[in-house]
Image (cartoon, rainbow, N blue to C red; front, top):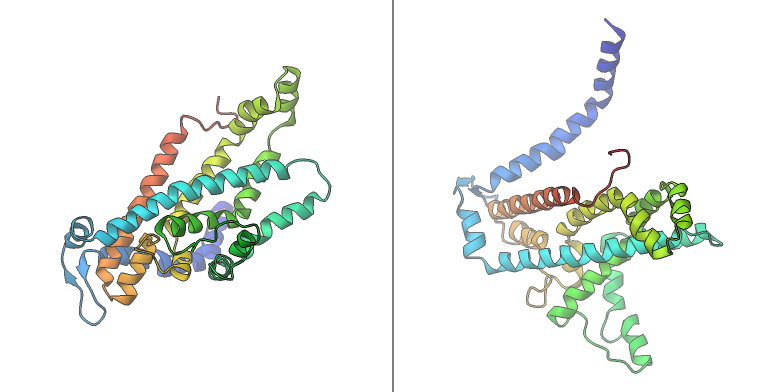
Length: 294
């Protein structure tokens, strides 16, 4: 047996447990879930083939689905913009030479380690109309003290703004990209008389554009899967203003036991995520610069 063949066999043996886990716990459930979208299934009775009936009902007879789709799309647009913008701004600040830089980086990253459920409970307490920290501060300064989860616009805005709380991982990725930019480019720009904003536009953003694309893709995927926050904080209300696709899928699967219907929603979520990813990669050809690509 040749040495290269032996190494290949050893490599496959090492990754074999991972392949088994991926197949059993990821590929098979995902594939079965997609197929289940074409069946009527309520756990207690055998699956019954219904074809495209679930998909037709979702788009023509189910206003709650259309509402959840609208909420999810709006959340993707606003939350991804806020999170990526805030992360890029913080990364620029943390890339400067200041005292106690390590401490500042730790402080900005720490909120991201709070789990989703605990974070939702924390914000629920902070935004309480009577005793929440936010309204207590507003009341102290004589400002309005709204019921943050009592109206549709405020509930949606609150959950969207809350997404900025966990930008730590995006900041770390941006920071790694910023530190990989050759300093000679900035020095050359300074020699040419470029001001700070010009260096940002002409050097920093083009050089970090692949990282920006990565964060946009990851941000869109993450936003599509919003679930814990609206479940804990508003339960999708008021008037389904925070009803996301994943929350609506959860209700159909585990509250109404409409497993086939929920699987159809899952398939649409998959297609939505795939479509956004393909669009971002297609769009990136116009603005992403890869060093050494000519």
